[in-house]
Amino acid sequence: MSRIRRPAVIATSVLLAGSAGLLGTVPAAATAPSPATAASYVALGDSYASGGGTRAYIDDGTGCQRSVYGYPSLIAAADGFDLNLRACSGATVADVARTQLDALDAGTGYVTISAGGNDAGFAAVLTECAQPAWSSDCNGAVDGAEAVIDNIVPGWLSGLYAGIRARAPQATVVVVGYPRLFDSGDCNAGTWFSPHEQARLNAAADLLDARLSAAASAAGFGYLNPTTAFVSHAVCEAPEWLNGLSMPINESYHPNRAGHSEGYAPLVSPVLTGGPLVVTADVLARAEGSTARITDRQRGYATRDAGIRPEVFVKPDLDTPEARAAGLLAGVDLGSRASIDAVDARFSAIQAGASGFITEVTAVAAGVEVQVVQAGRQAVQAGRQVVDAAQAWGRALSVLLGG
Image 1 (spheres, rainbow, N blue to C red):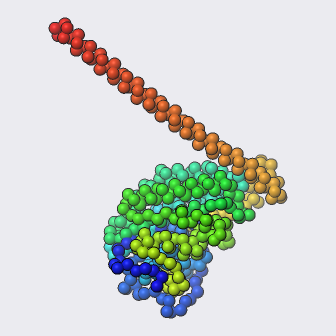
Image 2: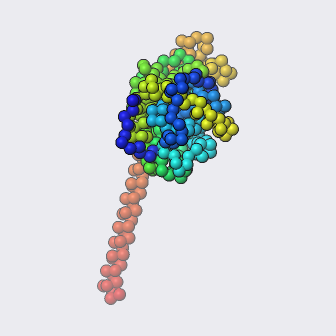
Image 3: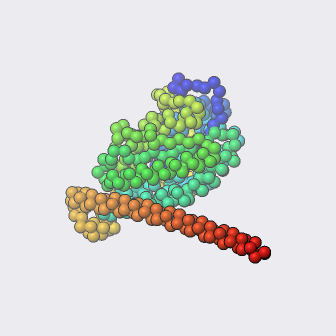
């Protein structure tokens, strides 16, 4: 067997756009156990939970990019769970609350949830940062995303997690985070992510993971941070668990099959079920054998899922009027890749320096503010001492005058 079984089953209860393609058939012997006798597992969230990036999706009449090669299907196949794969590419926190929570009930035993990346607009941020620095504002895009992550997403997550607990009171819920996209660099010729931009995008992912972790802890849910495990498996690494720029374009910047089978599934399983998971050929066959059952169930939600609009990464296009105008202003020869790259490097250095300068100024301003506050407190304290002394002299004078 691929999984170490526990003496008892603990009651337990997870970003970008889609296309659909019918998976091939598998031998009948690989079919999963009957749902009537299986523990209930509901996978909620966005494309990182639905299986976006695996290049093979069930034909359920939606653009949700649901795949039996995603980690929810692999975990369900390993333990014989009855999986309701509600996660959908493009889903925001509000979409999950509106379209997915009714899959939960008092009998739900396992829940995974991945949401928040689309709320931060990561597809749009990646689209901006992938362009040459002379035609984009990556710093501004990341700043905007981080502001949403810091100031808005936590409240939305709190409401969503409360809704999950209300509908599945006996379930153990695991919130699944997002990995960093970059490790040692970007090798794709069609994108211009500078080292500074890669670092900022990674930092934004870390910030989102921190907010997810805090919200999960406040709700009493488990949390899985995949960051460490995906080191050396990011975009352009070998082996690569995260797709870089890909065709079709909607496969870009998502976990591929290895990212789910060797990355997410072995990571999520111990937190969710209490036991390890190795995705063997048998587990994979069982997951493939669940295709028809998962497809039939999700077709029942197709009308509701139609309201979800996937956020799609857009490949840089230097032939647009906007890009041509930016190139003209920056002095770029758009017919020369060397010129495009050289000016990109110069503007990237300027933007990295500007970002560092703003950070330094902010830190200095914060230090001055602290000093002002401290001085104010000292002045108030001194004033109180003067008042106390005056009151003491008044009392003494009153005694002397026979008051």
